[in-house]
Amino acid sequence: MMRGRFITFEGGEGVGKSTQARMLATALEALGLEVTLTREPGGTPGAEAIRKLLLGVDGQDWGSSAEALLFAAARSDHVESLIRPALESGRWVVCDRFLDSSLAYQGGGNGIDSADLLELHRIGTGGLLPDRTVLVEVSPEITQSRLIARDNGTTDRIGGRDAAYHARVAAAFARLASAAPARFVRIDGQGAPESVHAEIFSAIAPLVEQRG
Ligand code: TYD
Image (tube, rainbow, N blue to C red; front, side):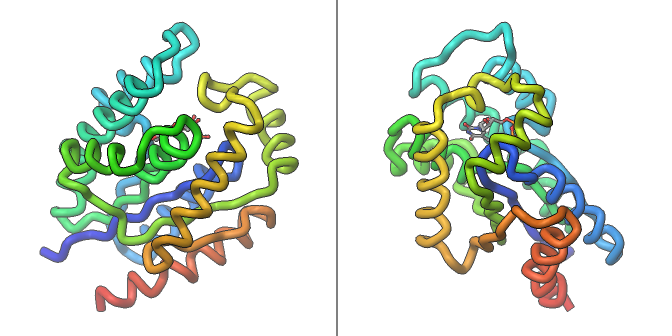
């Protein structure tokens, strides 16, 4: 059994990641691949329970370290009970956010050391990395208007942090992509969903062909 491929989507709030993850999963299925579409934080019952603790309206504000540990714990459950078994059974996994979100939000945004975040990831998942990471980038002004349309001005506890926080997150994503050009594909998310999808699909298609 050939291992499946692991593709993650990353970027700030309101850049269209979730739409694009869905469109890519559908396109891969149309090629005859078995695809698991999932998201973080969440994707398994345990990780969805942690998601509520982190993002739920009634939850509490966590300190930066506890927040990083909770994201890592959710990811550990998600990898061990869903992502790794799917990949080992030959399924492709398309995941809306993964480790790079922790490096950008808890690292770039909150100032937790990347080496510590990578150590948590090693403990939690054995250090699983995606085969490809699609970083969807959109200007802050467009993101803002999309978020107002989507959430009617409301957002979760992390999405609602100030503009300086989100600017640090965006800069951290850009640095991560520059540091690992073989894994990252940077996509301009400003066009129509279909044309953004076409660009993403052509970046991922070589992985399908390599399976030959
Ligand atoms: P979600 O509703 O999935 O937002 P979006 O549509 O923007 O992807 O909320 C996920 C929130 O959690 C988002 O604000 C980013 C944040 N997050 C982290 O801070 N660290 C992480 O490791 C992950 C996976 C998400």
